[in-house]
Image (tube, rainbow, N blue to C red; front, top):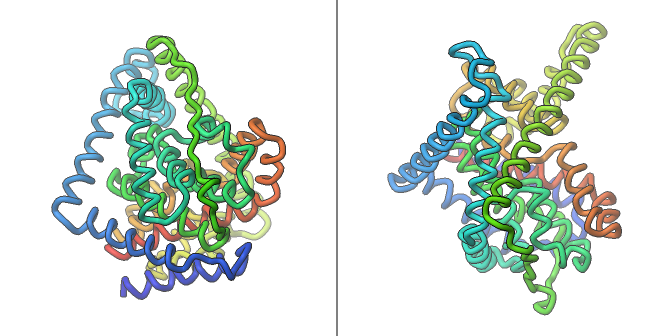
Length: 393
């Protein structure tokens, strides 16, 4: 039965992608099939082999340990603000981003992260058949996150074709940064978060090959990484601290606004139609959840969470999801958890568009023109990843 839902989920993605494709004659079927096969092997390896389970478990424990370490600083600064046994979202989930940002800054500073990104990117390009730049970017955005990742290829962004620009933007919306992994692992099962990080890299490239196929001249495929002036170590640490704190504040502000707005819409719908807006969204997305492998009896609840992520952001959706996980089957929890682990929402669309425009006005205008396809593509990438997770549950 799981294989049937794998087929229905992938067919849904392909049909929608095919309908909006920029060039249906150039769809890279071989690349798509290879990447799907790689995803199937990876998800089986990570969830159904002793080595894979050990690796996923160890990585999950690593991030749990990092969260504990981050908590020592949080307790020193904010200790006593929360009642004993309580962990406010801002302190327990967002503040660890500061420590994670510092950790990434140090790994970047000592050249460990650039080395890993470079060679994993080259390895990925061999598997996927995609350009070196696209593969490099897919890996680096999973480590650095956006908008920072765009700065690593700042010299090439003004020179990219619209097709290549779409691909890197889809990767940016589909991947999550290492700094966010710890925050998400506080709200979802760490093993689902880690699995989603791996699957999303391929899912974004699969969708790009359907919606946005193109041929690449070897002369175009040069990866010129912008290497900024090396800062003194402690200045780098200080800037990383501030970067992490800014992210935490921005996310907190967005949550405050979006959750309040969703509550207002729910009140309006309850007053006017005697039904919550969440329920309406659930019915709209229920068929998609069902085709991904969610049991029909749980499809409305799952669909509501999936829609909430698209309209608001993944944090709002995860908070809502935590409240209903005990009502859902383990399969539904796994599928929806993996689906939620990405930046595919309207808010991120604005961040990416603004980041590109700050580098190149012309390219920023291109992003604005294909914004709908970008949001659609990154959402379809999340559908692929969630469907893959359902295969092994």
